[in-house]
Image 1 (cartoon, one colour):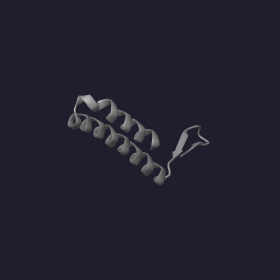
Image 2 (cartoon, rainbow, N blue to C red):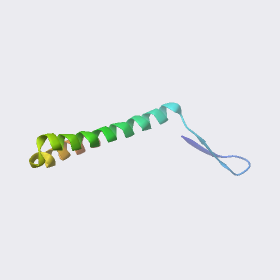
Image 3 (tube, helix red, strand yellow):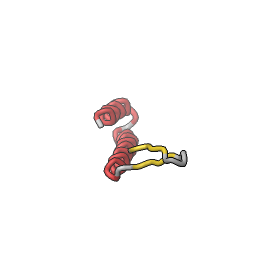
Length: 63
């Protein structure tokens, strides 16, 4: 992404298409991890939810 100021004094933003696709994919992956954590917690029961949350957090940090 580039930010430039035009001679008229306005801002001009230039986005690379691949940069935009990567940001959208990262957001989708984060949402998928959140949904996976919630659904796994329901399936495994509330007794194991800290472990599920920890594994999901680890996967999020590795991303």
